[in-house]
Length: 576
Image (cartoon, rainbow, N blue to C red; front, side, top):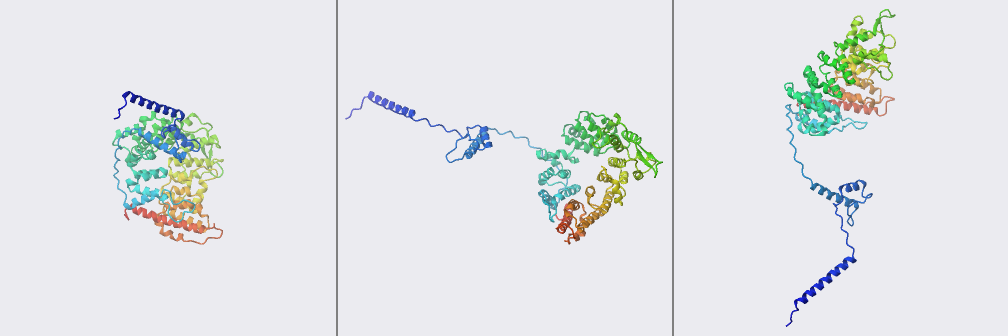
């Protein structure tokens, strides 16, 4: 039987073994260097990761470990992903904001189904079909959208809710569409614009009555005037001036003294709506405004009031400079002696003392006086002659052009159709009228002068001008004629285009007029124009390929007119 060792011996043996193990470990540690700890992929600061990404991993070594077989760029992306998760994990979700108020109701009727589909197509074609120099025969839908919108607004429809975003995007891209697009969108356009910064333009441009407080809610009017955005205040003032000019003036007077100069200028310009003698005291006070632009606008508005004190002062100054010499050889002669100084009173009444480059001082002062003088005052000063007789009077020296130019600007400012008619000449004699309207050196704007005439008379005058002079100088005149064009005007335009084709003219020179015809001709003329779509022989000396291009242009014209007729039928409820 084996006797176990004593306890002391056992303890000694264990201690010896432990010591030996410790010594071996110590020896190993001393002989083998420690393995370095791999940096964590998320340990690098975020700014260093961004810096490496911006410069590129090939230019700056990423501050992250790279595994065998892994590229530095991949390691950088891994580290960025880990760091992003770590950063987000430390964030608390923000408290939920208040839900927006429901969109306001729009009681107008919805579009007929066919018209709704048409609007969706027109909005989807915002890129246009007319890119490039050759458009082919397809109608340009982007050019039909303004007319479609105007017709839909005129018939009192509201835009479909699902198409409001696309409608606002289109209006944002095309400022010419904004008034009609926002009118069709109605109050919900404002609601959406307050939720999307991309549509903030709607807050500046919309001024429809449906979006503004009515006259029966004076507290809402006052609150919007005092607290609203600047564009909303301008829209409110303009709408009030249309409904009740006096109420609008009183509202402006409550804050006039505290408004900024640039805001005063815009508000003052709004007084052009419903301008009347009741505005004169306020405008006379504005003549002393500290802003030169405000003073000038006030003077212009007062000169548009023939019975104002400023108009009387201007007439007195002007008539001292102009007289009739009845003893001149060949009949009565207008003699002109411009003012010799621009005194403080003239400057207060809106006369700018310093002329533009190339103009003499005295001639510049006289032109401004004539422009601001009531046109009806000339008859009494010139022996009871009417506008046509006065315009026909010869003028001494070389001042006839500048005098007639000033009369033209006065006729536009005062909306005096009698003087505009006399300055333009008879509608049936455009050849003579053109020579009178635009002599050499003239700066007058015939197109603006035409806007003073009634719509039918304006179209007849332009038709006569085209018949006598062709389309070369008629583009801007056509742009101010009512749509659809009256039959005489439409016939004159088509005849002139047909003559240009027969003469072998360069067809692309008439692309602008052809585009206007597509939008402005009466759609009922499509069948009558069918004969023009045929491909004709090119005359000798014509531009190569012009016959084909003219044929395509007339095909597109006829196709567009028929599409316009279809669109109007859809808005009327047909084809739904």
